[in-house]
Image 1 (cartoon, rainbow, N blue to C red):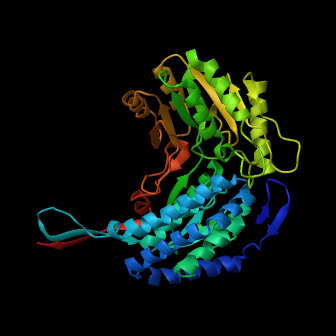
Image 2: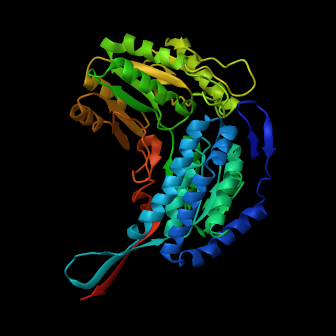
Image 3: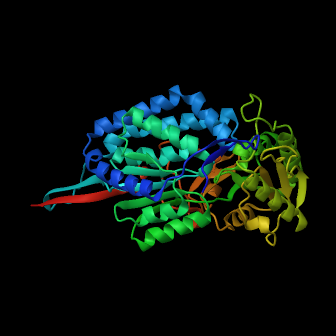
Length: 456
């Protein structure tokens, strides 16, 4: 596995990194295990102060961090700045709320002198992180677990090695001990060995279904806890009382954010049959008006995909959908220039028999379906192997909420999609994975909820 920065806007390899040797990996596990003994005993207030310093550093170095995101995986600079700000907010949330969440809880059971629940760390954890939100997704794993007193081994995506180094540098400078958080340029086989090591107590992965299955299998074989955030094919249901033009524009922008490379992007857009033509026309107009260009340029709305391979996969999925009978309204082709460029696409007419109906399209492709009744819309929305999130859009918010509650997903929204905040739980069901991150739920996955009871 080659760790390197290959700028997806140019196709130029800008930096290469040295992969970890087996000896490096063995040393990292040993160091993290030794560090756990002292880090777990570090006063909660001191751990919180370190996370506050991390949050401050993310704010102070925001443009630098955002530029690295844009260079490594192609995210437009303004969107990358938003990711950095969200990462900062997550570290700060746990610094501010962590001490209270870690306080002992007294149980009123009435037949003992004392019954309390203590939340304790479990030990060394390994995080396997993806490239599409390279700083935010590290934050939502690392922040709660460092606050708890766990120690962390972090394997970042091979194309985000510089981000991995920067995060480690910032955490150490802020007061997280060097051996309590270790960035590892490890291979897949080495990660398998790490998970199997008895000193490692759990693993969190955000990534593909294939990677999730491999990690979950190894974790289960070794009786380890795992948290998986995998793919998604989020439904977005538009009700018949919306402002069509306004909603279509908002939905188009939402779908194309990060070039459509988000697990919780609205990949299946469902609109009433009566407004289909108007809605599609506005989405096409909006998409065609979005600047596709240099991610560091001020006016860019859609950058390149993260890699040529990823671009080719998305283009192939569009081509196959058209071959099977879908209608392509715009885009869908690779752009004739160096880098991982693709013209954003809009598809309609996808049916159950087509591959695109069940697949996750990880790229700038809006797939729009029509429906004749709300029950039909919900049926289509739930006819998926995934279950990350979903949303419903309508002026009658009570009705929209009623429909949203019928979606079989981990997160539902009304008149917004995919909103992520430090205090909100994040996670899905079905093939979208299991477990939750962020908020108080971020403490639950890798902690020991220990009962301490004194008889009456």
